Amino acid sequence: MYTHSKQIITAGTPIAQAKKALIMLHGRGASANSIISLSGHLTLPETAIIAPQANQHSWYPYSFMAPVENNEPALSSALAVIDEVVNDIATQGIEKKNIYFLGFSQGACLTLEYVARHGDTYGGVIALTGGLIGEELDIANYSGDLAGTPILISTGDPDPHVPLSRVEESVAQLKTMNANVLLKVYKGRPHTITEEELELAEQYVLK
Image (tube, rainbow, N blue to C red; front, side):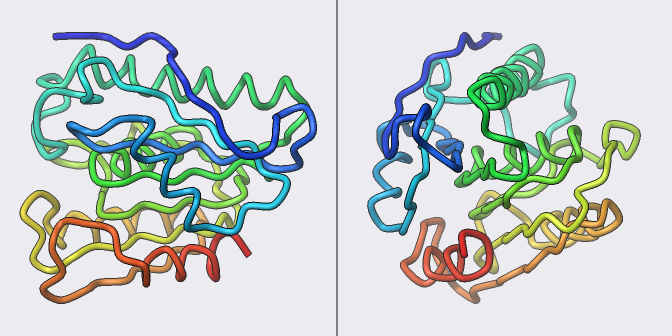
C-alpha cells in the first residue's frame, strides 16, 4: 500500500493573476503531464491549471468497485491531496465557486468522490468515464450541498472498467446533493477521451 504527497505541475495563468482554477486528475498508469496536455484542447481564459501527480502513477491500487478498505490508505491519501490543493487555491483568493475539476478514468472516480464528500458550490466538474467509489456506495460518506454545481459525466457503454450501472447510481447520488448533472453515454466508445466530450465540457461546465 502506498500514500501520496502533494506533487503538482501547473499551466495556464499564474494563480496570482487567475480568476479561476482547474484541477486535473490523471488516470491509472498516466501522469500529471499527460492530463494537463488536455488543457490545450480547452478554452481556459484567466484560469490557473493544477495537476497533482499520483505516487506510482495510480491513485489507489484496485478497481474503484473494490471494497473501500482494499484501496486504503492510498484512497484517503489521494483525497487529502486534492483537499490540500483546493485549500491552497482558496488561500490564493480563488473562491470555490471558481474552482473546477476534470478527471479521466481513475481520476474521474476520484474527482466525483471528492466533490461528493465535500459538497459545496464549485465552478463545475468534468468526469470523463468514472463513478463514485466503493463496492457499494456508502451514502454516509457524502455530505454538503453541491448547490447547482454543473457536473458532466461521460462514459462508454460498455466500458471495460466502469459499469454503466455505477455511473447511473453516481448521477442519482449527486442529484440528491443538488448538482446539475448531465450524463452522456457513448455506445461502443473505447476507454478514451473524445473531442466531442471536450466540446461538451466547454459548453456545459466551462462556459
